[in-house]
Amino acid sequence: MIKIIDGRRYNTKTAEHITGVSQGASGDFAYQTEDLYRTPRGAWFIHGSGGPASSYARPVGNMRTGGSDIRLLTETEALAWLEAHEELDAIERYFSERITDA
Image (tube, rainbow, N blue to C red):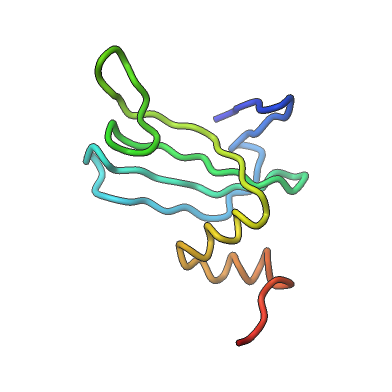
């Protein structure tokens, strides 16, 4: 998927795929997937998709259908997303300078 935001192209084919998560059962209206990417210039973004009851749904007339979108993240938001999904290897790889032992 490609999306241009503020004159910058975000492309899932040219960005580095970091990791992905899915929620729900495939085919369920609330099912959704999110994949975290990093562009060659270091920008972070999520490509997400899901069913008509997911956060990626879009209106069609008086109904909703599944959809997909690209959402930009700051470095802090990318780290928080990785922490929320317990992606420890990716945290160590991309944010080791921000991690300290308790």
